[in-house]
Length: 213
Image 1 (tube, one colour):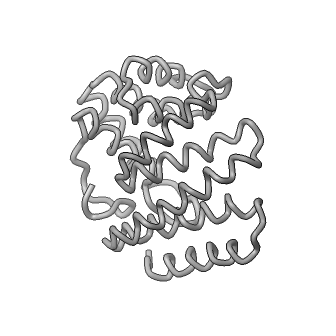
Image 2 (tube, helix red, strand yellow):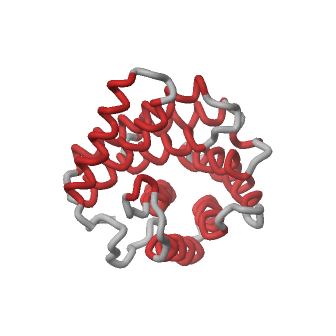
Image 3 (spheres, rainbow, N blue to C red):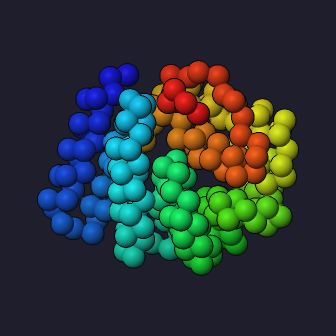
């Protein structure tokens, strides 16, 4: 993967959205900023990456005001962006916002995924475990990710290691990525949450991960 052209492409997409000044551009801008941030991480340009991940989270959150009530990808994306960026205060604020939207008790699995991420981010382990368990076996939800969430909540070090390696493998073997940026962003978010629990796993080198995870 040529990461510098990917950064330039995503930054150009973001600026194109800025020029249009329309609410419907916010999700597109969030996606582009996220892609730029992830590509910058792969280049080891961490401070620049964090700035673009911050932009992604901000645009996705802004877009919620004009979103349908089940657009859970927006709070999920915002929370993952700031988890990856390591912005503890922003993570806490976004987690509380996500829960206030009703994510933990959402009818859809994707909504409860937002809730599980938020509860883990706030270190509310028993509640997070309960919500994560509802994702195990949920139709259409990736079971490797459900296992990762549940094992973090349960402080199951061995179970988490197996789950996160499975999630990583799923990224290494897929053909499609958000914004065509081949980075295992879910793995990075899970590792940030696992670090809060003290069970982050030393992952092997991977073409879809930065050099330091």
